[in-house]
Amino acid sequence: MKNIIITLVFLQLAMSLHSQSKVEDVKNFTLTNGMKVVVLEDHSIPNANMYIFWKVGSRNEYPGITGLSHFFEHMMFNGSKKYGPKMFDRIMEASGGSNNAYTSEDVTVYTDWFPSSAMETIFDLEADRIADLALDPKMVESERGVVLSERSTGLENSNFRNISEEVKASAFSAHPYRWSVIGYESDIKNWTIEDLQAYFDTYYAPNNAVVVISGDVTLEKVEKMAKQYLEPIKAQPEPRKVHTVEPVQRGEKRVMVRKEVSTPNVLIAYHVPETQHEDHYALDVLSSILSKGKSSKLYSKLVNETQMATSVFAYMPESFDPNLFYFYGIANQEVSADALEKGILNVLEDVIANGVSEQELQKVKNQKLMEFYETLETIDGKSNTLGSYEVYFGDYKKMYEAPAAYEKVSVEDIKRVAKKYFVKSNRTVGVLQNNEPVTNGASK
Image 1 (spheres, rainbow, N blue to C red):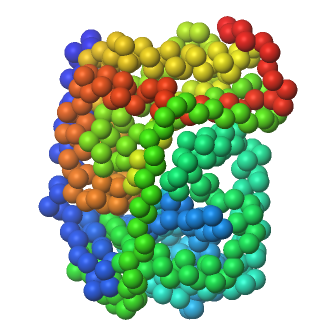
Image 2: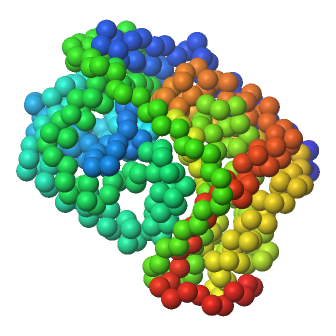
Image 3: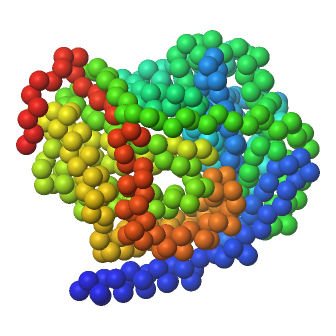
C-alpha cells in the first residue's frame, strides 16, 4: 500500500510538473529608472495580477521611526495627486479587481488582482501613488490612530504577538530584526510629516522595487505600459545598506511575560542563517518534519501522546539576514510552562541524537513538492513565488531550482542542522503566563 501511495504522489508531481511554466517562459526587463519587471504569461483565464515588492521593512528602521514601513502600507491607500483617499480601492473594485498588502521585517508588498482588460488602469493607479503619494496631515493623524489601535488590539488579543515581540527584542541585541514590525507606541505617536516624506522618498524609489505580473498579458503590452506609466518616475540614490551583524549569542536568554491567560504559552527561538544560506532547505524541511500536520513529531508527541499541549508549531520566516527559528506551544490544562518547555526540547534533542527516518523525510519532501507545484497552478501563486525568489534568494530563476534543492536534502543534513543550531547557548526562551506564577508543575 505504501508503495502505491508513493507512486501516486510521484504521478501527481509529474503531472503538475508537466503543466508548469519553465524558466525560459519568464521574461524580465529593467526600466531606465532601475525598476525591474518580471512577466509570466498565462492565458488560461482572462485575469492577471501585479505584485510590487518594495525592499523595505522594519529592518530599515531605527529607534524613533519604528513602524514606518507598516504605516505606509496604510498611507498608500489614502490619496495621491490624481486619486484621492480611498479612490484606489473604489476604482479597483469598479474595474472588477481587488488588492491587498503586507509588511514584514524585510519587504513591503502590494498585490493587485484584476481582469486583464483593466491592466492600464492598474498601471495608472500604481504610478500615481508611487510618484505622488499625498501625505495629508489629517489623513496621517487618522491612520496614526488606526495603527495605534491595531497595535494595542493585537497585543491584547494575540498571545503569540505578546511573547514574540519580547523574544525578538531579547534574542537580537544589535540587529534591527529586534524591532516590532508594527512599531512601538511612542514612535507611532511621534512620527513627523518630515519623517514620513524622507522615508518614502528613500525607499519607495523605483530602483528599490521589483514588479511581477502574471496572467493573461503579453510581454509587449506590459513593457509598453511600464514605460508609459512607471519609467517617468525618477530613481533615487540607493538606500543605505543594513550592515549590522548580530553578535553570536553566548548563552541562553529567558523572557517572562505576565498576562491573563488560561494556560501558559512557551516560545523558543534559535538563531539560524538567512534564506540564501546553504542550510535553508534542510531547515525548511526540518520545520515541516517537526510541525507539519498531526503526524509531525511535535504534534504527535505533545498533543496526541502526552497531551501536554493543545497546539504546537514551528516557524522559520524567509529573511534577508540571519533570523530566528521559532517553536511555539500552548499548554494543556494543569501543565506548567516548565513541563511544556521540556517537552518541546525533548523532541528536538531526539532529532539531534537519533535523526529522522528516510520515510519521514520522503513524506515531507513529497508534501513540499506538492505544495510548491500547487501554488504555481494559480497566477497569484506564480507572481508571489517569483517575486519572493527574486528578493529573498536573489534571482527569480532559483524558483525553478527549488524542487531539486528539496530533493537533495538528506537525513544526514537534517541531523546536522538540528545539531548545529538547536543548542542551548543559541536559544531564547519566552514564557507567557498569568500574573501570579503557576506553582503546579505537573504534566498529564
